[in-house]
Image 1 (cartoon, one colour):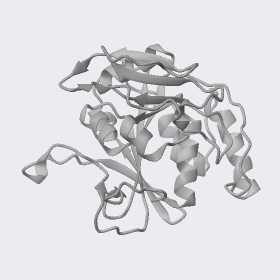
Image 2 (image 1 turned 30 degrees about the horizontal axis):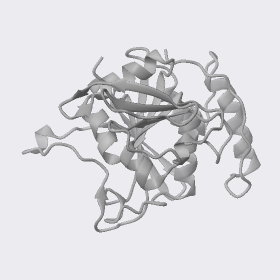
Image 3 (image 1 turned 135 degrees about the vertical axis):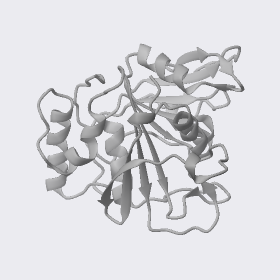
Image 4 (image 1 turned 90 degrees about the vertical axis):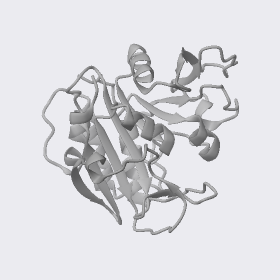
Length: 270
């Protein structure tokens, strides 16, 4: 079973909050999610119960990506704020509030300088993890901001880094030019982080997906056609449709965005 995490609240920005009724229902759902009782039927139960309990091993890993209708996550210059609308962003922050750790690659950390917290909703921010084999991320990046949340820097063996105060360093081997997804997950699980969100970018998410390391995948599609730009996934080319990954999907409406909740548990490698 994925680890339980004590619930604590964080103030909501008035500009980002939904109606008070929805906020109250979310706060009640949070308190139940980390308990042992059955979740009552609600809009949050339908969205998040599939990531409540690990079914294969001690870990539960969910990927998330926000995209346009033509499968783009950013312009050709890398600008991506914001592809999804307010409801899609709220969903992402709720996902963060339900996991132990949020994981991104160094490219996303440099390009977007994200905070990776839950400032838009009630909840506790997860540990922030950056996969950065060569230790390229600067010490002033917002993911390293000291706010009481765990911060973990995953680097390759042999990389010499001097972490900012309070930042933990995990050193893992490089295989075929990269740190392997299963090694990252096992290392984080040994740190007590069992329910994990792989948030980006496309290369990192695609690596975890190709490695068979995702239990669920949340694709939030905005009503936008970009026509060009950076694709949502970067996977090996296939020659015929029989090689394509066909997913079991449930759909949910998030304001103007559409959430595709993809069940990848059949493809999960233990």
